[in-house]
Amino acid sequence: MPERMVGKQAPRFEMEAVLPNKEFGKVSLEENMKNDKWTVLFFYPMDFTFVCPTEITALSDRFDEFEDLDAEVVGVSTDTIHTHLAWINTPREDNGLGDLKYALAADHNQEVTRKYGILIEEEGVALRGLFIINPEGELQYSVVNHNNIGRDVDETLRVLQALQTGGLCPANWKPGQDTLKV
Image (tube, rainbow, N blue to C red; front, top):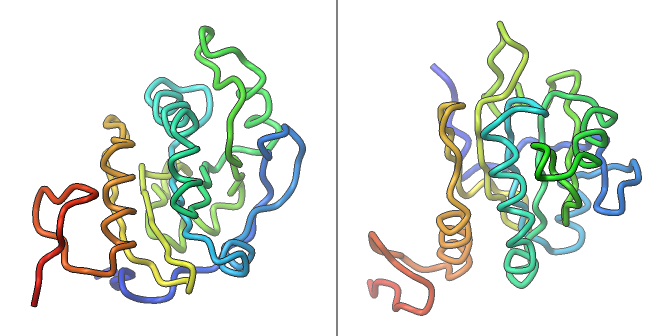
């Protein structure tokens, strides 16, 4: 049986990535923590597929909202940084990504994907996992979808804001609403 991860220190990572300026660099959880940032870490199966660009571009289009919440967004697949760059350099109308406002990381050796428990071993690709990690490195939210189903950016932002209240948020809580009183 897999061990729970929510409420524990998140697996640390450092990966090569294509940065928003289209240069190669690195992203790491430690760097986000040092900068007192929340981390929204999401995994997707593969570059040059069909559901993936809808999620990746939707998150990029709303990046300023994540930035306003002191969150760094990091996208990850088991592809290489070179494949990521080729996809970024492909226009959106041709099923590419175009410019992105956050880094796409390459977990080509599948180490990070495996640590987060979402590697489909026989295919060498990730499930659609999304993890929200607080600035102290604690994994506070985890959701994994079937690869046919894209994620909802509104829900990701809602959960991030709920976590940042530090309070008890009831079902259907929306930013600006009261949290529960104990």
